[in-house]
Length: 284
Length: 156
Image 1 (tube, one colour):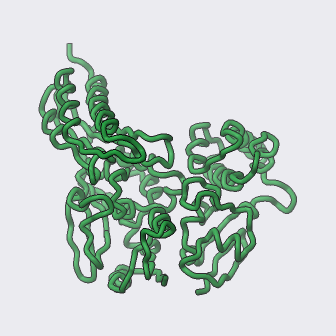
Image 2 (cartoon, one colour):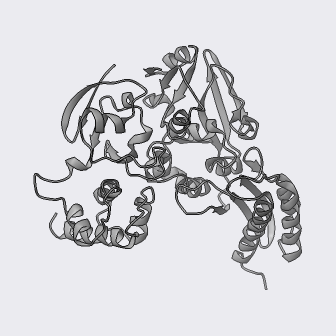
Image 3 (cartoon, one colour):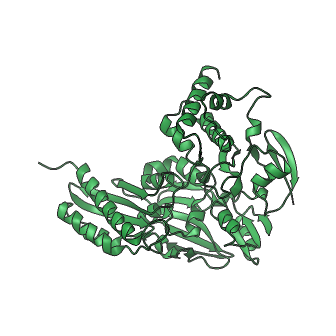
């Protein structure tokens, strides 16, 4: 296996055109797969020192995160904790301190695990990904990027250039709950993230995402459509619970059964809405 | 290929390849066997070293990626025969049993105390979340870190 460290996007475009080339940034997923023999690159293209891929910057239309920005760097960014608190919350649960010091957001997306943590926040914030290749560039919504377990819209010779999040509402309340056997280094059995904006008990807008309950991380759009612009009362929350039960499509695997995942996911959706309704002052 | 980097303040040059991990270079080429291999997949933290001051799993890093960078291993912590306050506290508090996980725990704690001289127990647990111990239980490890932090604040 050969190794090349690229220093610029131009070098990267060329290196990716070579036979058997695989990108490496932090290597926290790739090294495990190489050890297991499930990935056998002929050439490792190291992008960890391409400065253009490491920016984390706020601008008038939102936030841009370079694909090779470390999870720890994203977490250290004050603009992320201030403007995108759900992203900060979710990233704090990713891996461990050691993993967050190496792992990148682009890597977490390219790995395309149905159980990945970062997509739950990114999907909720309507993130878009920019994919670049030698002389090409296209941008697509993150939900179109994931095609299935380990499968993405990346074409041969393409790489993730950046992740863009639009300017968020300032009145989002945040929810995140990951179910696993321990707090750190756990692969989620199920996880639910949510953003909700309320006026009184009326839902102005809402986003709900879930992991480990479908071939890709997903938005629970039927749940969102059901409760948006409605009053959050017990009946509405029960209806959302029933909708969530139907909207997820989990499988049995070594970590849990499909039935358990389905039930707990719907319960978490109900908990999210219930906690939001409790946090609003009731009008006299 | 040849790579050059710094280990415990000393410049080294090693003939290696992309199939070799930083962990292997440290143990096999440089004979720094304080760094242990546990799971080999980033779950246990026994192979933790500091890379440019940050704790990382050396089992997940292809050797060429450390070119030009600084690595600190457990061998670089003591001052000659004088233990670092963290090492001394681990010994005193009985935070060591078989010892296999200890280098990783000490280095994770060292990185924490460099950026936060008075961590809460919650912050200590977060800093150590990537390190597993199968013998002592974590209470003594956390109290060793707390003790070391107190002493280092008193006599920095």
